[in-house]
Image (cartoon, rainbow, N blue to C red; front, side, top):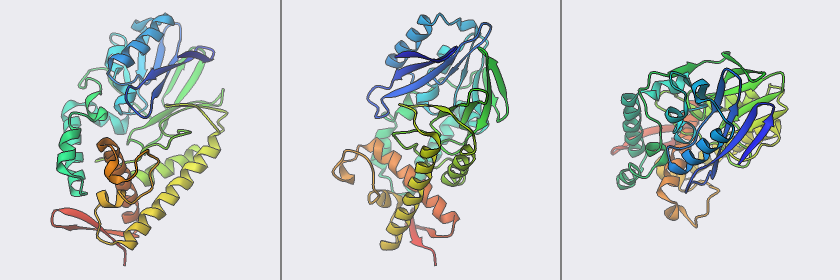
Length: 327
């Protein structure tokens, strides 16, 4: 699906095959001498066909096309090296730019695997995910010379629009959004989604991802946004949704703390199995392995937050982390 939202700003819906997100919203800001594509989709044939087809229909001159990756997740920049014009730039936020080198990306996955094992995630399930996790297998080619850092306050003037980069760490360490003050339009990427909740998980280079995310949300609440353009699905009430997300995580933190209090000494994997999830599965055992991975990552982010607030204590016992109420 291709639609013009504002003069020279188009939304391209890119399918995400066999993924509960269903679609990515890629946005093209078209100018005469320079165009900017915001996010791309997975490095998969279905994504490639939809995105390249839309760019062809819009008669985009690829020699003038840069890519703005709102964050490092594969569904957002998987196709960036294939789409960007020759000698043009792929922009990433500073906190995510660190992972644009293959050596660092490999280190990231090693760190994540080791941490998930510490949190009680079954080793056989991690081995299965090595070849089935889309975050791991549908990402972009790394080590390219045209990866460029986008910093908060940087600006683009394209197609009659003035766009300012806004830092939005939390969902990833280097999430960046784009703000068009004159139009009151915010490209919110996965920082603010409307009918699904952004996944907040641990990152090696972000000590307290949930706390960082909540601070970012509070800061974004001060922007006079008239229209928001999210990374997935449809837009909604901007301030209302921020308040819902803040409330959601407040409830989530309380639920996590209550589970630890009721049954001290559980691993993150066990705690995640007792949390409430909006997924079509009768019980934790029936969760798809990939959904368990996302759930454990999110549970861990809430436990990190509780540990930093001294409401929960993490101990190591027989090769795994266990959690106790703070006393």
